[in-house]
Amino acid sequence: MDGQTPLPLANLRLADLQADVLGGLLKLHEQFGPVAGVQDGALRVLFSFDPLYNKQMLSDVQAFNARFFAIRGPKRSSQRRVTCGLLAMNGDQWKRNRRMVKEPFSLRQIASYKPTIARLAEETASSWTDGQAIDLNEEMTRYLLRVTSTILFGMDESPEERNLAYEVGEQIAEWALLNHQLGVGALVPDTAFNEGYERLLAFSEQLESQVMRLITRRREGAGDGNDVLSILVRSHDDQGGLTDEELVGQSCVLFGAAHMTTAHSLTWTLTLLAQHPEVRRALDEHYAKAGAADEEPGRADPNSLPERVIREGMRLLPASSYSQRINTEPVDFGPFKQVPRGTPMVFSPLITHRLERLYPNPKRFDPDRWLTIKPSAYEYLPMGAGPRLCIGGPLAMEVIRMSIPRLLAGRTFRVEPGSDVSAEIRSTMLHPTHGVPMTLHDIGVGHEASSIRGNVPGELVEMPS
Image 1 (cartoon, rainbow, N blue to C red):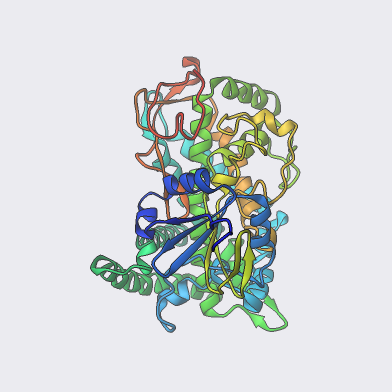
Image 2: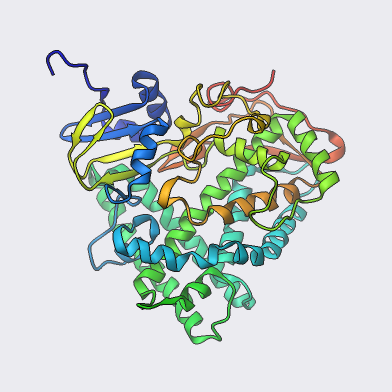
């Protein structure tokens, strides 16, 4: 490249990047700015940190295909079938399946889920006692396991069916974890990867069998259930219904996409509120006047304090910190010209949400910033953007919106002083490394920030002094 500007390319082993994805993304952006690349032998991965390149990658579904699962498994394997969901589909199959899957996530259907969400949130809150020590992330993971299992598989069913729904939900959660743990090992296999791969294939067979049990029960039943799976089993268009493979894949992938991302979103938002008592007090005052804000889905006041708190929490600590695409044809991507087809290309909401020119004082938790800013879809993208915008996003927002006032009601959340509150990226998600130790108190104790350590205070979030 004599006489030309060098490419923003880091000579970095992908295995090292996988070991510290969060630190790697931050360093790549700090060193190279809006676009960066990592070269590991013959393999090159490109990274977008800027709205301009986010838009290029996310708006053109023909030139940039989704690639959510690194490990699809052999063609006729259970792993191939359980990964056959929207996040792994492209082309005509993706278009048809997205049309078929839209109904259970319509605003009308979301409204029908609200009593169930409210009941489960209140049951969770009522199980806590004054002075109880909890790991907030464990509690939110367990709570969202119940919510996601019920809405996807177990509404309007007998206790036996609900228990089966929870069992399947737990299996999907474990399957998703196995996929995440193998991760980049698909690119650089070793003995440990091979052992994990065999375990994943065997586990996928068990999971497929259990999900098919649910599908068969729906088909043999009255067929009028209100859970997502029942609606998908009934869905038909001029080509007929979804195939067994598509039903299995959509069930597993929808659950996997919804469960942990929503749990982490709640964890981080409640943690931010605990560490910003002035915002928490203002929120208490809002709820005291307005109640639990159970407006019709899609009609919540975007300028209300609860909406600003949720948006700001998902900006500062987005549960989905990065995702990727694969180009299907040679493309120019910033300074990278005629990028060969099949190149992995990553976009990162975590980094884009921290651009100073878009969000002044980006590490500050400031819900009021949303009274004056209106970022574009490619500047603020906690659930993606473009034609492949997360189909379950409105439901996830409704779960968060309804859960926060019910979980907070009459209770103070206080982070354990001196605890290590750190974040790491596991697969694509911003995960609390050591959990979030909290003590719950009756509201009379008052709200107070704690002195904590780790990479969240200071490095990721500017905490109040």
